[in-house]
Amino acid sequence: MNHAAPTPLSSRKAPGLKGRIKVPGDKSMSHRSLMFGAIAQGETRISGLLEAEDVINTARAMAALGAKVEKQPNGDWHVEGVGIRGLQSPKTDLDFGNSGTGVRLAMGLMATTPITARCVGDSSLSKRPMGRVTNPLAQFGTRFETAEGNRLPLTLHGARDAQGIIYTLPMASAQVKSAVLLAGINAVGLTTVIEPVATRDHTERMLKAFGAKLEVKQQDGARHISIEGGHELNAQHLAVPGDPSSAAFPMVAALITPGSEIVIENIMLNPTRTGLIDTLVEMGGNVTIENRRLAGGEEVGDLHVKYSQLKGVRVPASRAPSMIDEYPILAVAASFAVGTTRMEGLEELRVKESDRLAAVEAGLQVNGVFTASGKDWLEVNGGGAPGGGKVTTHMDHRIAMSFLVMGLASRIYTRIDDSAFIATSFPDFVGLLNGLGAKIGIEVA
Ligand code: S3P
Image 1 (cartoon, helix red, strand yellow):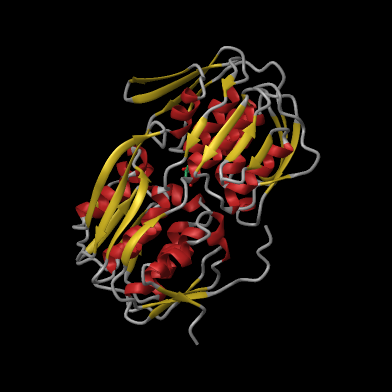
Image 2 (cartoon, rainbow, N blue to C red):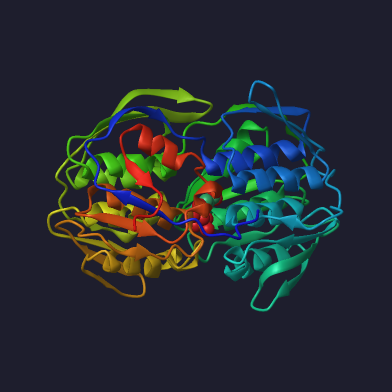
């Protein structure tokens, strides 16, 4: 995608937010729906797919690898799969834009099919570590030529007749876990991933739904996930529920803006994704889950959120995997709490779309919030955000959205240097928030 011209935005003090909204489909499930559909047999039908740049790049990559991917007039997406051995070498580079999930899972998908593919991304993605995926995939016999430091651009040469591997995850990463399991689909025998710290489990749940021979066992305090290679997947009909990581922004906006009461409908409540809700409730946030139900193998519900005076808490490292993408918006919530909030176990934040620990702290400070930090922790002093600062977003959608939310309750306003990357995950963010009464617009003078 071309993000040549930065588009600054500002956000001003708003009256209470009111209304019912739906946020777009879950990003993790959307990427996986397209990828698993691409290697299944038959036609996978997806409703509720997130139509944001990251996912559209995955759709294009799957088409370049030989799957037929088409949006239907009714808004559903259909993917005609090629089978687990059917991927073809793409004729052009696979451009994953801003998306670590897109490129890392696709590398796993391609790793055990003897094809050659060059993967590229934007300048944010090109700074992110790929060794965490190329190292385990090399154990299947996959070869890589990478830019310096195991980064993109990268050329992958898939392995022929790969054998299954056993791999213990060195960091809590669902992307790495997923890449290894996907490579295992086309390897001989069992591939086992040992996961000492549980991360989001969409790959396991969805691969099972597609008919993969996958088993999860708890052993010596770790999850052992095994997949038996060589079995075809069967096309599925999938309904993607709302993304809890996108719902996080209107949820915090309503909690910190006096007079607010909103409902966010149809949000996925997989327990590996709900750490932010637990934390906000602990902080005294009035968030209730209504209409809990099961849909497409996931628990979903409607989030009813009312303005609340929050209080500072300690967020333990053990909760980090279940809210890894939510620390920027939690830090914004914490700046309106009474007292200090301390967040621990944040080392993975350093390697996201930006160094999120540094970017969040700088954004808080420039808006008059007092903070302290270390290698893997952040403390935020509450009491309200004076605002008035301009935040550098570093091509990071979640930094951009977080500081626009801050402006709604800040004493004056907040500004961000670039809103363009919001389109990677939540294209209608501004329209949806303004529909609730937010005041996000062009930059104030
Ligand atoms: C994701 C996993 C997480 C998360 C990302 C989506 C996924 O990354 O930050 O936004 O869909 O598997 P890590 O697994 O690298 O922590």
